[in-house]
Image (cartoon, rainbow, N blue to C red; front, side):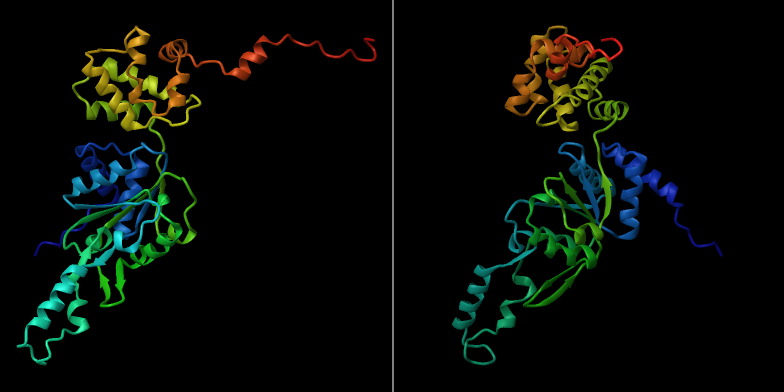
Length: 330
């Protein structure tokens, strides 16, 4: 009799998760892969926090694709309520059922009236993302995107789902998940989240990638682009992120910029600064950032030299003051 199959060691499962994510087009480092694997193994939601454009939403998409799971996405916004996030009664169908019942004189009671429990049943529920996720019979990834944009009251409603994977509908009772979804919440940090929400989640802060990792991400996504172009462009973006910008370019902006340069048939960053300046709409997304990027400053970044700030220029141009003489010198 052969022994039962044992699950692979955790390290092997984490490695397999990274390989699957890579095949789905997402390069995760070891810390992120460990946290995602623990989220699945412990059946706990994962809260991903970080600046916009660092790959939080892309992780959920790649995770669903790598597992062959259904991706259910709830995009949060100010004023999001229960009817938009979880469920809503199909009032049109309910009203039609009532009128059809009143017109049918052959029901058991003979009065043609319909009972309340007949129209407040599961078949009259319109499933919104949260209810849709816990109703899945197979693997599912629930993405609650930009939770910091929703109101604090909506956070309180989420606690039941994040803790017990269930939704209570007053008219019919508690609806529990038949297959536990893997829940990923993202936040751009525009407001502080409640302690109750954080306590129910595993946490990972997703920062901008290192130079080597961002080059690998761009090469994996755009294999047709020249290696020299990818390396030059990513190095430029890494330097640009150290500037005093209102909106830092994320990985998505880097990919857009490399695509634009590739479409313009550049094999490396062009020497003509006017040509580079014309493509910066892919990277700089505010009026202030766009107009602060002069040709000279752009050339400094391309050459790898950071521009001198205003305060540094003033300090450098100011005449040096001799120290006040001591009593002995006087």
